[in-house]
Length: 197
Image 1 (spheres, rainbow, N blue to C red):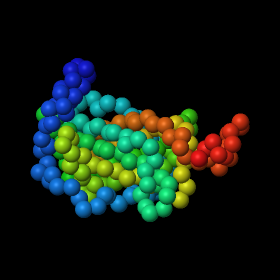
Image 2: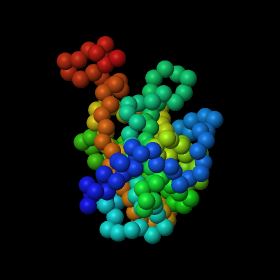
Image 3: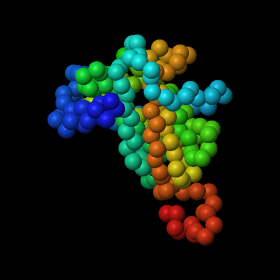
Image 4: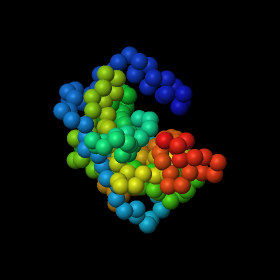
């Protein structure tokens, strides 16, 4: 069943499907970077597929990692990461959302405690809508603030809460990535500082 669904999505993408959202114009400027906030003490909800069609929610959510650290300002060097979040209806067309919120958790492997968390409600997401020839979606520019994470392996957990962050999420997607371009405070044993540049 999952293979069949993946094939339908792939063929739809390759055919250049039209989005069901009518806003097809590019914004004048990229979305503003999102700053992380304090990490809540409660444990993260389990990241598992929904058991059935979620009420008041799109049919599915897909998350893409736009590789590597990105520069968000006029100073040289990366400032954060970019994710693209696409919501799909039952016909596999991209749709916008007008309710709920996203919560993004960034974990540095093998740690289990989030390194950073970003919350984005539906009103904020409206300014992050970016049309595409294949699939329209939301561009999340996730700033890591004043201190970047140490280089290595990361995993993003992206949750969608259609009824707000106080309710249960209906979707969770994991995105694994690596970033070895980041500078560490102390070079690992056997490496020089020049090797990390």
